[in-house]
Amino acid sequence: QQPFETGFTVQVFANLMKYGKPSPSKSAEMMLGIIAKGHAKEDIRYFSQADKGDFKVSWLEYRDAPPGLKPIIVRQFYLANDTTDNLDVFVFESPESRWDQDWKSYGEVMFKRLSAIPAYPND
Image 1 (spheres, one colour):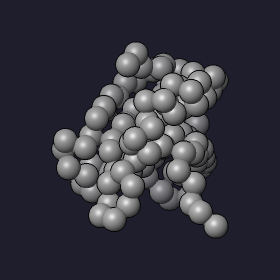
Image 2 (cartoon, helix red, strand yellow; image 1 turned 90 degrees about the horizontal axis):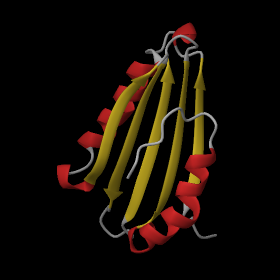
Image 3 (cartoon, one colour; image 1 turned 60 degrees about the vertical axis):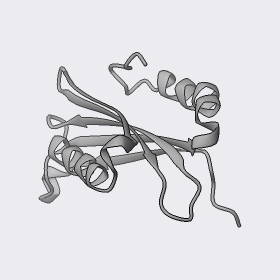
């Protein structure tokens, strides 16, 4: 079985603080920090954060090219709400060689149709 090359992942983290975990906004910061530490500065292609009402939203796009593997581009959206104690993470990834085409045909279409996203950044 071959691993997927282009994909969309949704992760939902509910009740983080209820179970003694860091707040959703702090958890998002920690996850973003792990990615930043694991990648060279030039591989971070886009990063944006904003407060939208009760939401702290973060956008991250980066190049991931571990030795021996096909380079990919990953775009992530973090939607943290400390009031409701929820963190939603949306991820689209595709091979670097097809990124522009796959993003336009699939990723952008899915992200723009997600009703959970309060603010879609202009590229």
